[in-house]
Length: 209
Image 1 (tube, rainbow, N blue to C red):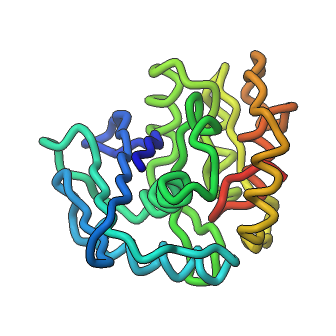
Image 2 (image 1 turned 180 degrees about the vertical axis):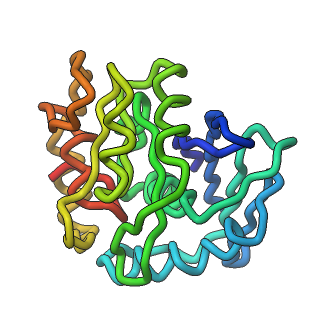
């Protein structure tokens, strides 16, 4: 199963949109990260797996390929943890990928599922807004930076809250709920009646609450 999640990367003082493609296929259990991912990005697979498992999710023994597009530009930083984690959940059928159609995600994950601050949030938020996306899900510590961008909903988890949803409950809610369309909003970071803003409460999962 193939899943797509949008994020962003820093290039100099600017940023650009990165599409995180996650493919789950039959084969020997392994995770391969391609697309000129640097060491901090490749090391993230261990953080992501621990964060998901400690948050109550199950990762089936599959061969996982993570591609960061465009593949011809170097990607650096630990902020790809969150989009990769959500891509893994979507590719394994534990989360609906519809949630990510109009949102970008960025954040470093702790082994317990806690979402940690990142660098370059303002530049990435600008790139997200210029790409025409509705919002940007990031760590709460970076909300003040990203909220400067007008017309973009900057969303984050509650301070001090870790992601501890249960996979069974997540799948049940996903079956019951149809993902609503986003309605226009400002940059104040308020949560709207939308699955993704509500999901910002759960950083490692980004699912509806």
